[in-house]
Image (cartoon, rainbow, N blue to C red; front, side, top):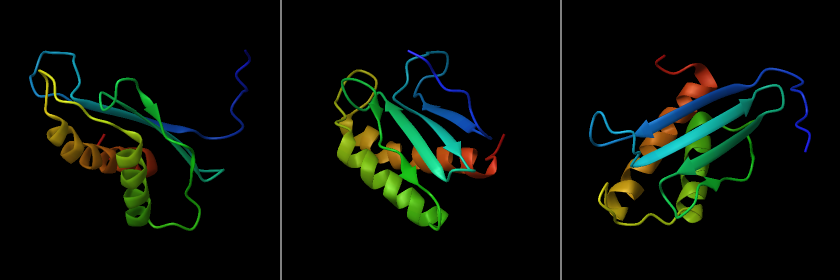
Length: 114
């Protein structure tokens, strides 16, 4: 398999929510890659389904940040299937996921709080 070279800027970010400091186990995590020259956002979500979930690419041209956050949250909710386990309940994961994704979007679109 060949991975093509990038033909422009690519911004990436990763966020992880964990409940106990010192543990590397995420309750919810997500990664994003944004190609501003193409207006395409890619996102992946972990710890919210039996396997990681990759959302279909999202076209960002002409869409506000709030509308983009709503679209990402809608797609994430329909693509994930959180479970209850020792780290967190499914309800907690469903509540935290949109907050984590909004922060991740801020990071990748405008530089966030780094």
